[in-house]
Length: 137
Image (cartoon, rainbow, N blue to C red):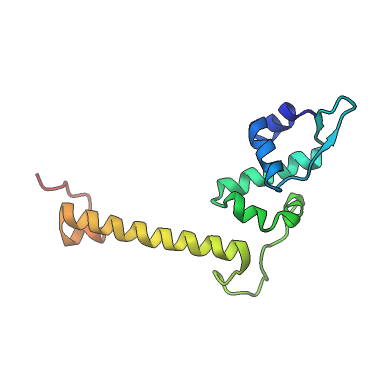
């Protein structure tokens, strides 16, 4: 299928598809006799995986670091990212790094929320003890 069809099937734009190709997330597709990109179902499946991972908080740089293994995630069911007996959160590599970044951001937002609630409603509100009470005037 041509670039517009492949992009639509994967839920992205032709421009995004070209970017993924330029950044090494997607191998260069075959070309038609007239030189147009020609995408196969396997490449569209890989595009869907890329979109899903980007939507899950990974960056293009994260995905570049494991681009040679992205095709594995198109399998049904996809393989697990870590060992089954590894403790939760002990992942290494791109998944472990992304989890650590997300955990740090959750901690930062939690502290920010507690500080804002404390300033607005007093100490009890910072810990969710408002129990539906209206904020003071």
